[in-house]
Length: 152
Ligand code: DHK
Image (cartoon, rainbow, N blue to C red; front, side):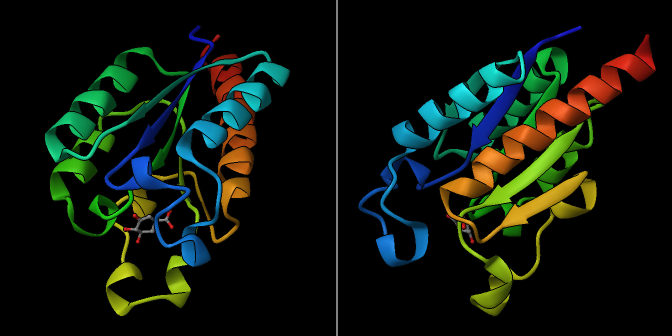
């Protein structure tokens, strides 16, 4: 079985740290990556952590996760609200999927209330800042282990 958790990040998340810190916090994406790596290691998993500002590239990353991930954590950022193509790509996954958001999207603009990813996810963690990722990794590792033992 794969022991790699894919953590995929959509547009503008490379600007974390300086991007609207009152909403997204002061942690950079590099900080979040290091935290996810530690967290996954504690569960016996490695991570493959990716970010892109391009929809097609995000879909390519999902395709790689389809072939190689034990589970996937995704912060689709703006594409989660708009991208049918991303939704279709995520449908290819046969391993667990967790959606994470730094901010509480339900408490923001109306256009952020709809997620095209959430109906495909095992769970959604939103509004806890960098902690959303940490909890997302914990959940992904637990679900990946459960999924692998079912497959045996
Ligand atoms: C990040 C974004 O870039 C927004 O487009 C989403 C999400 C919320 C977040 O909270 O992590 O609406």
